[in-house]
Length: 152
Image (cartoon, rainbow, N blue to C red):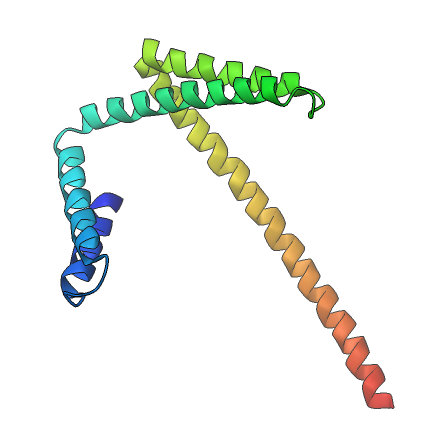
């Protein structure tokens, strides 16, 4: 749905932009690609989901390899570089498992997204309470400040 809306708005913006504006053609192309991609995703949701899982798996394998390489290159600069090495190994393992068993990969992605949403929500609530307390502290501090200024 996002790709469709983004494509429509990019296409409209590109078509309404004056003809001599730089980047007009790329906006129109981006809009058309977004619309076509969304039509394909809606037409073939199963293939789209499997493609996304394979993309996530490939990304995990690639990023794991980069992490392992970084652990070896930075072993003299980092302490506990073995943690980066372990993280890279786990990323590669996750990517391989995504390719070997896509249905389990889909389930794990759902659990990861759900866990992320819960942790992120808790962090936002914590931030909101801290900001509320900070606002009260600021009002108290500025109230004391204005009160002392009025006495002078």
